[in-house]
Length: 310
Picture (tube, rainbow, N blue to C red):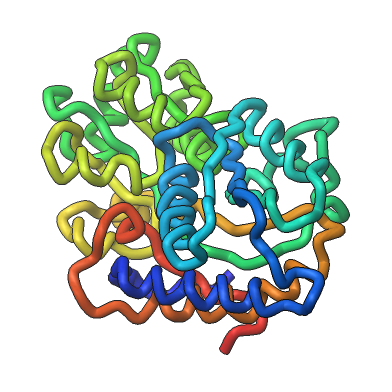
């Protein structure tokens, strides 16, 4: 995965990309001359409101407008993303069911003894889409402004502090555990939610004192001042949140966590996937070239180069 620098993604650029994608799909041989004949389904292996859901809905809208066909998003959260990934692994390889996968695809095989899919044989990779850093955030009235200040406060009475995260095995959940280990805060409870949106709501509702999640869904609340970001987990500060330090700058060496998203399909969908590859590669590159004001939510992620693209 080769992340580009933070870029500005416009609706116009995404529509051009989706049009290229559609042209490549529709132009693939006689067997797919009528494609698509029915709605295309993008399965998100998480609950609504999280970063993967946001990206999937943006993609679906752009594809639908470019192709003139219905593209729907279906949320199949649960079991750390295994339910949704297993669903797509068993789907017909006909081009009508695709998966918007996240880092859980690579992490879960090391966490679960059994999986409803084979990560090496059940999927065909279509393209990588985007990568986003994470953020640690608190309520403004907690009275802390940095990660070290939060840690110092939590250490005074760790049993009264907790941190919300998306499901077990997601990179935000893993980074929360790394923070606890580094700071000796094992008594601070981790409250795991079915999705990133739910974990963020827990912070906003005062159920937890710290949130560990992907930046995208938290960004508008940080901008509005309803939550306070303590640090982001990328290698550099986020381009439109320059006042928020990285964890590296906050005194945590090597503390870099990000979430990637990618499009995948059932393994036997080889010909369709090959037809998608060139136009989707062009899509990722096109999305890095916008020069005007970014439109949410894709302004919160960085496109990545697809394999084989220049």
